[in-house]
Length: 628
Image 1: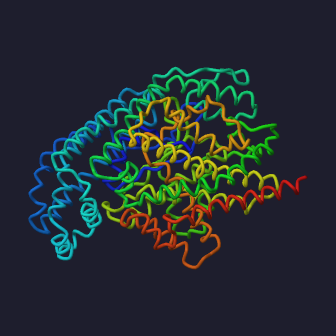
Image 2 (image 1 turned 90 degrees about the horizontal axis):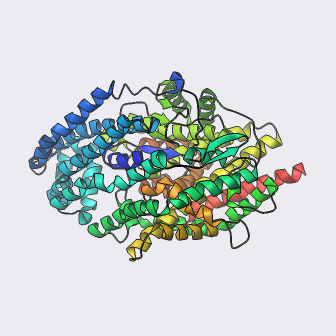
Image 3 (image 1 turned 135 degrees about the vertical axis):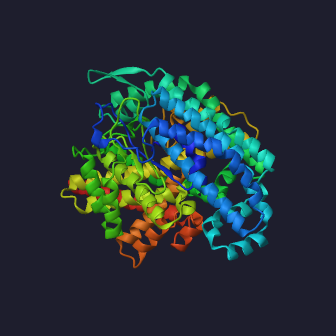
């Protein structure tokens, strides 16, 4: 599963967490295309009519920082002064988010544009100044004290929308630094993000990628070319693609390893400074997610590897191969010539979400009618797909639509995020509308699973049903097992550094190679793993946003729980699910899901998902027996 561009994610992660907006990601691929049709290019003028308007707003935010610093004296005075100060900060935070979203959206549509790069640089600088200027806020909130804070919350209704933030500061008080230290850390924010920016520019702009001839045509093996050609029906072509592409990444092993090691070191140092037992614990603390959730996911997924190996053996059988290699993971197991336009994808997504009710469908149709999608690939455009939520606006959805079933699934996935934003924005104030990623991917995968069931219910032939079933199982491989493998790699790199071990590109390749072999059953004879593909870690931009990808796997388990209950018409379940989406970020995700009947800190949801995959494999094998 590819992510939205790493540079964008790095720039906006802090704004997302602090300022009430959400950025979420899904798998997509991209191919070269003609100049984009204006109907399929988003209109960013509701954000800013011109670049000059954006720059004026950026400067306005920069100029207001001294006056925001002056609010420091209002925090401990009384309830009314606290509410007024927090309201002022919220107003400017909301404006900051709009500036950040515009810059990132422009950059992702054309990474070659020098102005886009300059705009991102200006945003990084602004982010550092913003963080440094407001680094005192948490310290001031802590000094209020819990008893006084409780009294003020009872006395001032206007503080209600700020309550979660205020209580979180009290909860995390033991891990906060002095105001001076927090200011220094915030000021270094742009420097700490430089490695992520360097990786993006190296891989998308500066690196020389190999070219091979495929079907009589020269094909460049950059990230986009690889993603498209890795599913080529000719096994010899696939093997060449993997050899040349990952060979090229292997030659960048030292540089990319150094850049990623800097990102890992940042997390480890942050954990030590703040007194957390590990980098993962520090990363999960803001959303009050126990580290045990992460480690339970990894442990239970490892127990479920026999099911993954079962699928891989079935893949070998369906492809008719004498053995299975890593370059055999992506070709379709059953062929389908069916293609989907963006309009058809929208219609199918609306139809598939009927179990969520007519109001959900109405809101989805309205959102699809707004000019907020950037649909087709274009030169310089980033790969992947994402949704950006801006409070009070229809969400922006970034795609690289090719008309394939994968593109259809990605369309539904991203609009799961989009509808999450729509529902949260309609219910929550700005301060609590932004939802954590732990919940975000449940909404997107639920849309995917509803789409799968909608299409399976309407399949007319065994071949069509077999195609849909194999696609469903492949989604589980990619979204559950593969993402957990990534999560385990992140644990391994951070844990190694915390133990004082050196972390180089070569060491990362060794760690990743061991995981590739374990997950794909190399020692059991399930799959051959060529050492050249062990540089795949360098290709995965997720790792520059540490402890992010595990949420794909936890969310797949959560989505399976909700959609199964909804489709089985459990009384009240659609409303229970939609209430989770409407809650935005007003409640921390793990307790919020428990109230909906889902405990993500237990082995149960992960074991249930593995059983679901086994049932899908049972059905595929029955269909194959019928065909014989």
